[in-house]
Every structure is written in structure tokens, then in C-alpha cells.
Length: 158
Image (cartoon, rainbow, N blue to C red; front, side, top):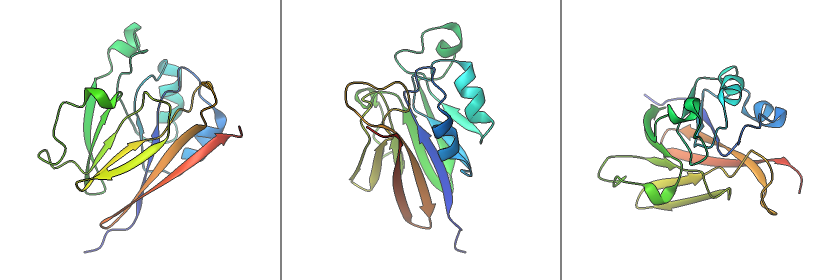
């Protein structure tokens, strides 16, 4: 039986900044993944008011709240297996062997999607304070049957 489309909101590197534009861009998603450097419970709570959230710890999530976040998370979403961690360099599993469809990371602040060996590697960029001249972005991942479509959303004009 064909499944209808489902949309996952993907955000990272907010560094304590809960942008209203980010919350508006995530409105209507079924679930949100935060790939680390959340920056505090206020950002998590604002996201959780939009949709359920899965978040992992980033290298700057060092306070008591952030330290309690897991380093990685694996979830099922719309029939897809999704693995989340902050820094792609710390990927400790073989996604294909683990039957993972999507690997979501943050850390670099650079939006990027790459497909390798049947796995989608997705970095939504940063939705936090501007770093250098990098864009301020998040992503929406639409799952429609066998298709995975990524849409990057620029939150603030350069």
C-alpha cells in the first residue's frame, strides 16, 4: 500500500538562538531532528511546540542539560531509518550494513546533501548566529514512497 508523503524538519547548530523564521519554516512537519549544538532547553522547547523532536549533543552542548543529550540517535520515520549525529567525522557505523537510509549531521554550518551507496547524507546547515559568510539554513526532508527529497530553506538573506 503506498504511503502518503511525510516531512521531517532538520535543523542544527542553533547555538541557543530560536529564530522565529526557523519555527515558521518548520510549521507542519511531522517530526523535527536537531543535529546538535542546540544551545539550551529553550530552543528545544520552542521546537517541541511545533512537532516532536529528536536531538543529539553537539560539541558546544557542554552544560548539564546539553550533556544529557545522546551523542547519536537512530529513528524510524515514514518507513525510513535515520541516524543522527553532530559531526560526520564521528560516524561509527556503516550505514549500509546497518540498513540506514539517511545520515543527518551538523557541525560544519554548511548545507549539503550527498547520496552515496543508497544512503542520503544530509547537513541542514546552521540556523544559529551567522558564521563567516555561510547561509543561515535548515532543511525539510520529504519522504514519499521510495523518494527522499531535500529542500533547503534559507532563513535570513545574506
